[in-house]
Image 1 (cartoon, rainbow, N blue to C red):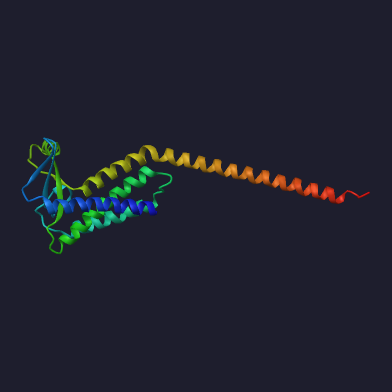
Image 2: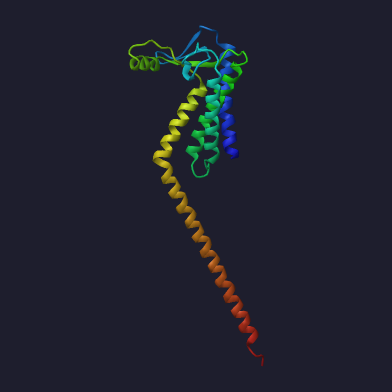
Length: 210
């Protein structure tokens, strides 16, 4: 559990550090090219849903409530995950939880006058994909590190659970059974040695002295 908590704070702080740097050093309307025609960095304040969707809808207690419920569910799943048996599952669900809580905090303070959730990444290919599936509607999607953590974490967790978790669980049970058998055999050998030792002592005690 301690490792999970440390990972959570690591992911959470990465998100907030990137948001702080964005607010502090990137001006409104400024666009920084990271990968030409692929990935750009800019500053947007989003009071709507994730990925900059509904950014002009205003702060909403409904979005805060949804984020809070999602955070509680993810926290429960993360607490039930065994780090020793399933490291991939533990890391991915903790990553998703940190992303959800990161945006929950920003949405919560938006209710009290903050500008909104800070978004900073824009992917032109993502805009083109959404435009294609919405019949040519022009979009400008921005996202933050928390969004990325949430989506990637959930995708990895689901894939891991569907295709690898059961195999890991069976392997862990087999290993646990093998260790129990080993301990049992060790105990039996110890018991046999003690019985032989007691028998030898009794034999020596019963032998008459000349």
